[in-house]
Length: 375
Image (cartoon, rainbow, N blue to C red):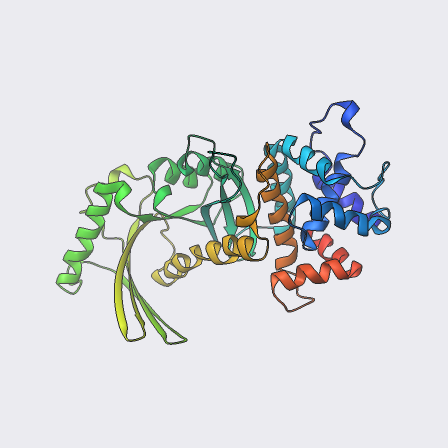
C-alpha cells in the first residue's frame, strides 16, 4: 500500500491546509485519504466516514501516518468546511487529466443542485459539471456562486479543461454567444440547445425548419437521420434534420463559428398515447455528420443518467445534510472522485451501490479501486 499512498499524495497532498498550526492534530492528507476511501466503500456522511476509519485503522496504518489515530467525525466536518474547494477542484481535475489520457468525443456540461445542502432560508449548492461520454468520467466541476447562475460558471469550467477536438454539448441555459466563443477558444466545437431564452434565435431556427418541412425540404440542403427505440411498451422515434443552409438565418452573423442548425422531432408512444416534441440546436461542428450530431444530442442526457442520477441513488446526495462552510461543495468532489474510481472498474459486474459495498468488505478490491484514483 505504500505505492498507493505515495501516488495519492502526488495528486491530493499539495492542497493547502486551511487550519492553524494548533489545530493540526491530524495530517490533512490522512483526513482526505480516509474520506475518499470511505466514500468509495459506502460512507455518505462524517459519522460514517469516521466509523469506517476506526474499523479499518490497521489497514490505513499501512500507508498513512495517523500520528493521533483516526480523526473524529467533528474533525472531518470542520476540516472539509474550511478547505478551499477551488484547490480541491484543481487537484481533482489534475487527477482526471492523468487518468483519462487524451480526451476526445462528446463532453456534456450541465448543472445540478444538492437539494438539502442549504442552511435555514438558504439555497443548496449548485454545481456545473463536465462529463465525458467516451471515458465515463466526470472531468471537473465549478460551483455556481451565490446570486449568480450557470452562465458565469460554465466558462470557468471550460477554461480549466483541455477540450481540444471535443464536441461540447450544453442545454438551453448555456446557449450564449460568450459560451460559444469560449468553446471555440478551447479548440472544441459546440452543440447548444436553443429555446426561448434566446428568443430571436429560437424564432429564426424554428421558422426556417417549418418552412423547409412545409415543402418537404425541396429548397433546403440537409442531412437526415432516424432512430427507433422500443422498451417496455414505449416506442420512441427520433428524426434529425441538419442543415448548413443557414444564409437566411437572420442572427447567424452574431454567433461565432456557427455552421449548422439541427431539428430533432421526438415521437413517443406509451400505452397507446402518442406525443410529439420538436427540439432545436445550433452547432459549430463542420466536419460532423447528422448521425454523429444525433448521437451527441442523446449523449448529453448521459450526464443526467450516469452522473446526477447516480449521485442521488448510489451516493444519496440529495438526502445529504452536509452544509457547513465549504463542506457540501467539497463532499460533492469526494463523491465524484469515488464515482470515477468505481464506475469503470470491471472486476465485479454489478451496480455502483453494490461495488461500494464490495469495497467496504474487501481490502484487495478497495486497493484496486484506489489505483484508479491515481496513475
